[in-house]
Length: 338
Image (cartoon, rainbow, N blue to C red; front, top):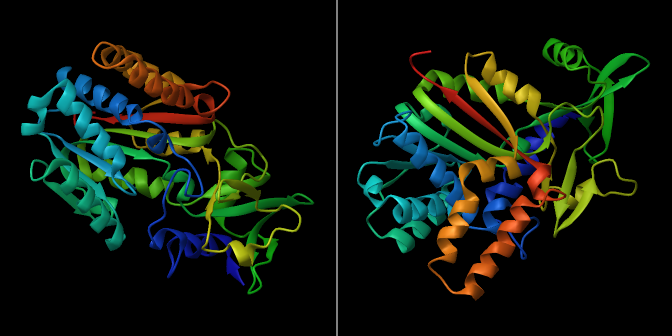
């Protein structure tokens, strides 16, 4: 028997784990992301970065860091839009990716070489703890749903946590972990996921970077749902982890496993360190960042056919009944003067 968090880690990051080999995203993969939907997702973040620098909140030689970049498309889109909107910044900005898997690093390096030649000097870090800067704009898309979690269930008033046996069957036993018990009491959770490493991530970011802005998008709810959200994505089909008849052994390491991010807890991890935190839906965030303005620029500089094609992609990002409300953003700011 092993704790569910260790099983989760092994599923995604262990030997032959789901993320240990390159997986495509989009039609040929198991899921879509905002990045694979439209390059204007990254373009909007680029516009925000430019605004932050022009406002004097970050210097023009700050480092743009992406955490969990997969193929590198998001950072690539950000760079492309900075070049379009304010090209002189490419002479001073620095760019980095936090990536633990060497094969993904190689893929990212190849993509950047093909896209930008020798213009962009891309730096890689194994872990966020290696990123030590005076200033940085850190961006991440869908990383916190891939942090290990424990499954929690309350039976007869007693909080239990999940363990997985050798046959991939989930069983619950009484929980004695004080941190989990405190989490359940504070957030009034009786059933659901307890995410690990959120506090550690926030602490490392806050301690290692003097002045930073951190922008992250993910799916989830403001509050804990008091229900299980853990699920598996396989070839664009969704399987709740406790769905009757589900074969975890068959899906193990060959599909993506995830859960909804409890955003109040994630925000508290940063607020407890004295950071300023904003919360928005993806729709609100991208509009505030200027995605509509970018589409207007496109309209004035391309054919109607190309413009309408990009508009339809952006609609998917903003649709209130889809990605626009389902995905949320937190925007964190920490100044060395705080």
